[in-house]
Length: 397
Image (cartoon, rainbow, N blue to C red; front, top):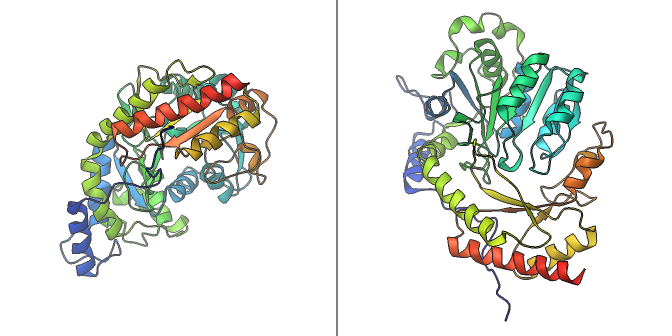
């Protein structure tokens, strides 16, 4: 009899009692707005920014309403505006090109390698087309950041990092988000800490962060940001920067602060689950695992593999057969957007030139979430199901 997996790929762990208690204290106070604090009180949002700046080693941090808002704010704060072109990964999620389009700029897509990171050779050929690269560490895969920064610095291209999938990760010991001018993070439910929606920006640049704080809707209350730039950084920004309100509130901040303290432990738990699935799928005929370089300290909250050069009908057959046994997977090769999966040629508000090498990789990417509600035994079962169904379709072909 075939094994069936009965877990949910969208069920996250409950919010901890410590975080619930902190949230109840905010609710009882009635002071949810980040600037509505009692005399002498810092407020949960300001304290969260301080915590996150300390964790990442950043000089400044701003907490905002969503990861997508963080991306658009970073672009605006870096001076990107209507008509500008911004380089970004062809393999990413829709909020990344969406953030570029939201400021009136135009995405220029860069290819993806079989290791699911930005293609540095393709990047080199396109560096003269834009002054900014919005680098997406898509699904937690980090490219050679030393090489990328050397390439971009030599050309004078500013790097903004999309770290929605890499909070707590690092490259050669440097936290993700700390290589470029600005790092952007998400605290949406399916990310590494969960406040439903939310995000952060970090930077060491006082002028950039002053603009970001003003954009977020600080009015003239910027002095209440414990992890914000000094007052002199706002001397001009307070006049020149539009208010595009997107603040985080004290309720979400209260939920997040205890989670940040647990992030290292959660990272180890995610990576243990990843290792079980990786080992279970090793040497499966027709299936390619993604290599992870030694310098990459990743956080594996999702798992990807490649069915490279498989006909579309065979990939869909694998997905259908696995789904019938309770294993829900997503495919980035489908011609139509579905759920959270879409491709650079799906975003028709952006001009996209043909990229055959990237199309080949995208056509093979299969993706699944790894919530911490899965046990290690669950992960071993998931791997057995995938291995069996990939093997069945491969042999039949």
